[in-house]
Amino acid sequence: MIVTIVGAGNMARGIGTRVLAGGHTLRLHDRTKAKAEDLATALREGTDGADASAVDADGAPDSDIVVLAVPYPAGRDIAAEWAEKLDGKIVVDISNPVDFSTFDKLVVPADTSAAEQIAAAAPKSRVVKAFNTTFAGPLAAGEVAGRPLDVFIAGDDEAARQTVADLVTGAGLRPLDVGPLHWARSLESFQLLHMASQERLGLNWSSALTIMT
Image 1 (cartoon, rainbow, N blue to C red):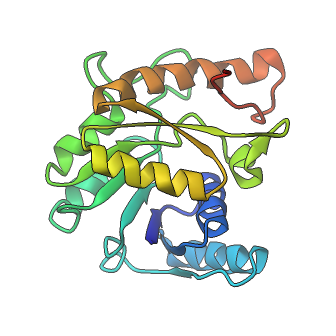
Image 2 (image 1 turned 90 degrees about the vertical axis):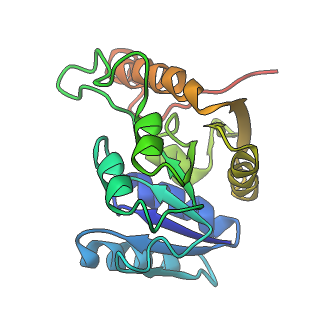
């Protein structure tokens, strides 16, 4: 499938690495096109036979999955701007609406989430929450302590959740479908605790959340 990642930061690099590991076509878009081009080049060099390239805003939604790998509220704003282009598209929100000055609270009301705000901004898209509980470094590696990363998935469209789960599986990770999009509220809160614990526990952004069975 064709996957477009909006953003060219560390999370875009990590997710892009996994997308290419699954043999998919990767498109990258960033408001600074040179950043997208540089990342595409780096990812091609890191994966034999990789199909990765930069695209402009008009070409970004022309894919099977659009991943908004940008901080909150940029993803919501992009979804609103591209609402018509995202009609029927699977849109993956990876953001965590955290107060980064304190790391002690979320900046959205308790009765919503960043993902639900994106769904409201682009109401004809099929929004899925995924990758918000994974850090960039472990994503690039695909594992922590020899165990594949768990990727929690939430969304109101069951077929969209399954498509994202297939992408995750092909990337060598383990998808965990937790159900409807309202569970994104819990996933965002869960990750807030994970992020806030990094310095206190000396984890250095190299940890992962997992379900042991």
